[in-house]
Length: 514
Image 1: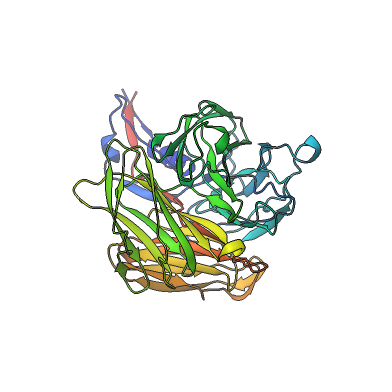
Image 2 (image 1 turned 90 degrees about the vertical axis):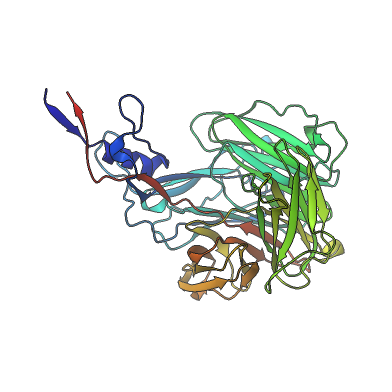
C-alpha cells in the first residue's frame, strides 16, 4: 500500500476562521495526536449581527454606526467562494429584516415598513460609516461581515425620541445571534412597556422560549413556548401579555432557542422615566461586575437573579475613582434560588464615576447569578433611565461605536489587580486622526476617560480597548445627549469582540494509508 498525504490541518484552519470552531479527529473519533497542543490564533472570516427595530415613535431619529477596528485584519483575507476558486470581496453590510416594527405593528396604514438606510458597506477597517433611519417604520436589521472586515465588526444603534411616551435616548450595540440570553431588570408593571425583540439573521427559521422570574419565582405565563421566528425576520413580544399574575416591578427574562439562533434585546419604555434598551447580562457567574455608573446618578437599583438550585449570598462593593468601598446599608445581598431580588441604592456614587462588584460571601462555594442595574439621572419630569447589565472581562479587544465629542465617557474598572489597557479613538466618520493612550487602572478602582478624541474630529468615532498587562478589566461607555433640560443618556457595556479564534496549527500534514 502506498501512503497518500492529505493537508487536513489547512482545511480545518480555513473552516475555523469562518465558523469560529474547528476540531480534528482520527478515523475512530479520537483527537488526532499530531494536533495535540499545536494551536494558533487566526482572525475570524465571517460574523453576523442583528439589530432590533429601533422605535415605535413617529418622531424617532436613529443613527447606525458600523465599524471594524484595525489590528487583526492582516491575516484575514477574503474567504474563497464555494466552487469558484476565487476569494470573495470583504463586505460588512446590514439589510432590513422582514416582520414587524418595534411595537408589533406593520407600519403606517398596515403597509410593509419602509426600508431603513442601513450603514453602507465598510470598505476598510479603521473608519466608522454611518446612516440614518427615522420614524416608526424603521425595521430590524440583520447582516454579516466577511474577510478583513469581520474581526471585531460592531454596529451601534442610537435613537433619540424627543417627546411622547417613549421619550429618551436609546442605545444598543447590535448583538451576535445566540441560543441563550438573560435580562434582569425587566418589568411587567403598568407604567412599563417592555418588549423582547427576537431577530433571526439566518436563512432557516428559529424557535424560541421565554421564561419570566419574579420575586416569588417563576411567573405563570402563556404563549411563551415555541415562539416561531422566521428566517431574516423579527418578532417583538410584550412581556405584560405573557402572564396573568399581578404586575411585577422586577422581573428576569430568560430567552432560549429550541432550534436556530436569534439576536435578542429588551426594549423598555417607562411612562415617567423615559426609555432605553436592556442588553443581555453576562453568563451566570459567581462574581459579577457592573461597570460605568454615571457620577451624577440620582437613583440606582440593583436587580439580581440566581438561576441554579442554590441560594446566593453575595458581598456588595462599590468601586470608585479612589478605591473600593461598601455601600451604606447594602454590604450583603441574599438571593433565593430561582427568584429575582432587588435593592435600591440611594446616593450611591456621591459625584464619583463608579462600578459595582458582587462576589460570593464564601469564595469556596460560589453560586452563579445574573444581574443588571437600573440607573436614573435627573429628577421629576426631567428624569431619564438607562440600564447596565453585568459585563464580562475583556480578554483580547472590545469596541464601542458612535462616540461624540464632549458626550462620551469610557469607564474602566479592575476588580482584582492593577491592569494596563490601550485605548484607541478611531478616525471620525467625517474626518479625524486616530489617537491612542495607555491607561493604568488600579485594583478596586474605576477610571473615567472623557478626553480621548480623534484629532480634527468630524462626526462620530469608535473607542477600542485592548488589555496590555495585569488583571482583568471590565468597561462601559456612557453617551449623554441632553435635550430640553432632560439629561438623556445611555450606557453600553463593552463585550470582547472574539475577533480571533484558536485553531490547530498548520505546521505539518496528517497522513493516511490507502
